[in-house]
Image (cartoon, rainbow, N blue to C red; front, side, top):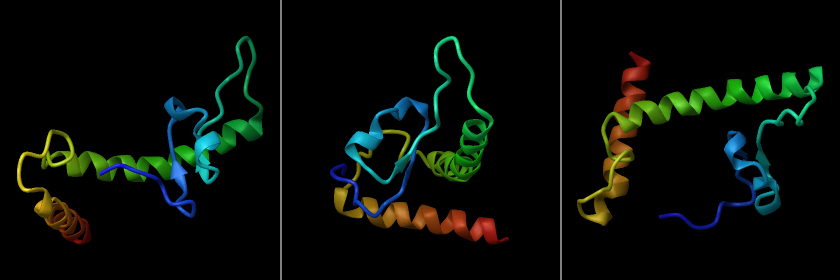
Length: 98
């Protein structure tokens, strides 16, 4: 698990990952408010649009964590991790469709 992120992958991160663009050019993080200043309206709009995209992913992660496969240490056979994760994703997609 872990490793490099493909250069073509767009990373949508929260403000805790400021500076990620130095490591991965295709990443987006919200603009932080400068000390003693305010964000410009275009910066606020960009932050809002990024937040709208991220919330969809955050909600999916929340649902997957209910099954505890990502929330806790995986203690079963590593070979089956991908299979089980895909089954959980399939259950989520099935539930989403109904």
